[in-house]
Length: 299
Image 1 (cartoon, rainbow, N blue to C red):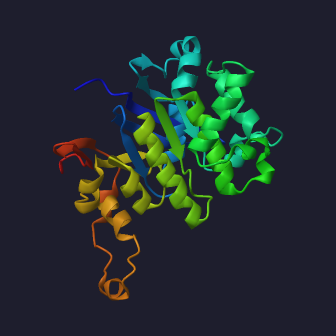
Image 2: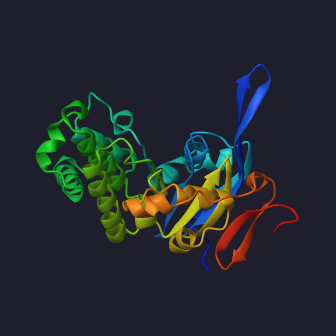
């Protein structure tokens, strides 16, 4: 097998709470993303998903562990400094709130142009206008939206502009942190289908973080489950949803609402030993490609 596009090894992150107190937001997380693959990341709020995303993007420096992107040791400060332009061009993040990602004083066209310039992909004024129009068209926006500022666009339109800016950079890896959470349900489906279609066309890899389990199941090749700062299970998406093994994964999937009232009346929350939610132990491959956090003595 080829080396993965992104290889995350034993990443941990500790934050200070003041008065000598600390919290370990991410603990000993390891996983990989292959070229042209989408990995979904699910788990309850506060489990460390967004913190992990920001570590991967270099917004936080990890307390421990290593990150390799295209065999570059990007968690090494010296490497990240010397390869900064390459990393900026090859890795990009789509945030939950497009308002925070777009300058309110810049038009959509200006935001996209800025991304092209930073990535070294801006040609000239004439060709640049054509680039911007093509990018807007690729995300389902007419060129007239290029002259609009973020405040003149709907939430879905702003997220489309953020995606267009991202695609203009042509990254190999996109980290999408809850990219549809702030949107109406009708718009969410449009954005998800857009990302899926664009990935098929441009062959980028993606780490897709979301609370909506149905969306993760639809868009992801593999899915990782995070709880209390640790990965507790990772497998092919269909296998994980059909045959979850970790107690937390089972609880998480049992929370999915079913539209059939008769089914809901019959459903019971699975009983389990709370001690099994201990985060001690190591990830163990229990089936080919299916890893579960197992206790010492219970692997």
